[in-house]
Image 1: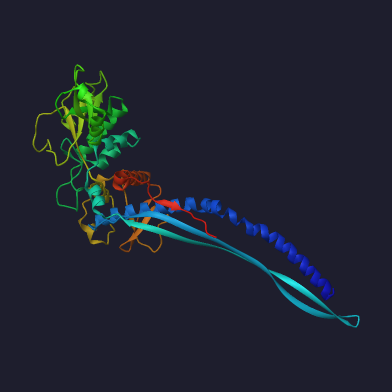
Image 2 (image 1 turned 45 degrees about the vertical axis):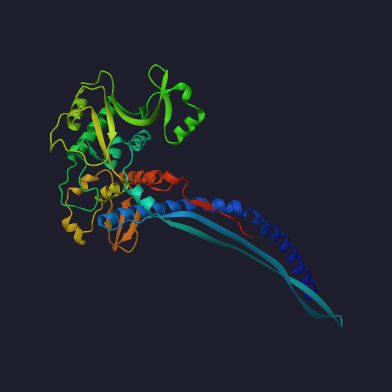
Length: 420
């Protein structure tokens, strides 16, 4: 083949190659949708994994009486940039043909393409005064009933989020660093089991009722204007008719929890045992559940007459984390292992178990794991109870602990702008 013929073949191959490359380079207009498909799930999984590891790390740190730390992912901005280019490099050659000189030129194609990703992650330390207040504030009774109505087992909710039931303690080592006070949770767990058995046998129901508490005197109906109604709503109040309907009053709507006994089931053995355990008046058709702050008197320490009210002493989020820290299995070589009472494991049995091991690699059977103090602390992938508790705590953190509860918001935002 002569040089001239080879040059013509190169030119044709270059044209074909360039024609095939142009559509591929033009496919950059699909970068946005493709980038979203490729990264949306991965970023979501990464944020969830970070949240789970942070929660586990805080539980472990609290066992060692070290301060927990929360850092929220405020936003993720992933900037993608696609670049492409092409061209031809020319050269000339000569060849002797029939006693003369023939000159030929050729063009060789050059193509280039690139894709760069420059994500920017914004962090927000969750350590301001508002966050600290939320961590130290006990949850409300409405939140307790919301958790139960949303499908979480009654036993799980009560064991985690209630510190006392009518003075019966749910263990004592939950409100702060470890103390020398005796651990007492058997009576509480027995009461929870009875309550769960009564609910399973459909002997009682727990529901939320609205009641009105009057905060002002009687008013004639004509004096209640639209402007007055607006001002009342701003203050969390409303106007409602009094008995007879001729006069109205300014009232505040209150939510009350009620334990209602199914008609005819008042004398069932399970309910009698439950009333005795919770120090309630037997035979009542309904018992009011009241969330109170502060400690309650244990009837076993100071006996008193039973009553129709079941008082709940709810926990704050930090108390629940201290409680779950009792489920950390301390490595035997750590000094804390020598002073850990064996009965602590009973407090969180069926709720949380954090295992530990030594090694350079993450445990193969771990669902979530963190390196800490030259050990791996982890929750096993087949430990469904601990995984469920971890899920509940993450849901509660989004419901009550973060800024969503006070100032609104929808958690971390993911932005995927597409560059050139």
